[in-house]
Image (cartoon, rainbow, N blue to C red; front, side):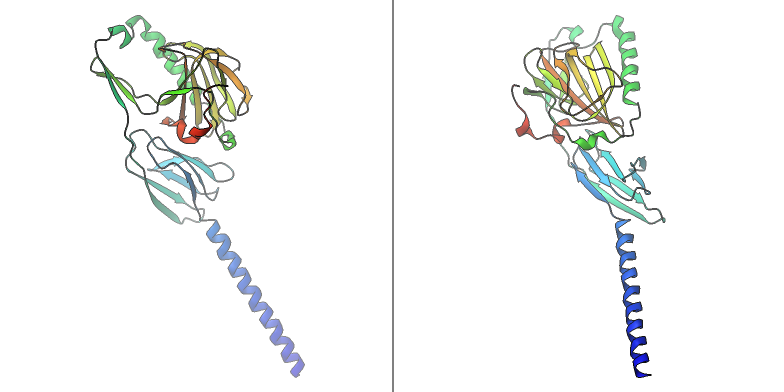
Length: 288
């Protein structure tokens, strides 16, 4: 009888331990299911990569953000983004987490140039219809949905050169404020190779846009894209899948360019971001 009681005691002990183990696992997996990972640049023009439970809903300033099958999502902050952004996550069982993101303010270069020929400031009227059509062509290309997260390959400089223009700068020509510059300009020799800055799909390969000249747009997935402007040559076609570092074109001065250079621009779902924040300046080479 004593042995039986001892055996029952041991069995009860095991049951209790197992119970606590299951409770421990429940809380562990429950907390994992409700975690948020955020990594990137919380600054005007910045890009942030987030990760959470893939069955969750994600909102930035009440705008729904799509997730991939792994629960990864992208956030972007505009050139003049407010100092705070509200991130809201609704988990599968209804629990909500809200987080205020502090967005660092930037100072931008403002350049004033006066006494210019008016044609250098405002395009002649007979080009207006062409410009309007080209804006639609570019817009449609950027709206092509690419569900594969190519951006996970990481980013590299698309060409060698000297930085001659930066994100966010603005010119005031003859007293008229022009649109801010949303890219990074790299100047080099005519024909300098231009490479894919990350994996992706070519959604536009267009010769001689009025402003941008010969242009390639690469979709990196989930609404993130790179635009490569003012090219002299294009070596890829629409629909082509490319890898980071593939040669896609050559540097030129097509379009409204004042010299040989590459203008590299990036955008996430209509928000222009700073490409330079995604690469290291020390990796930029002056020449190939």
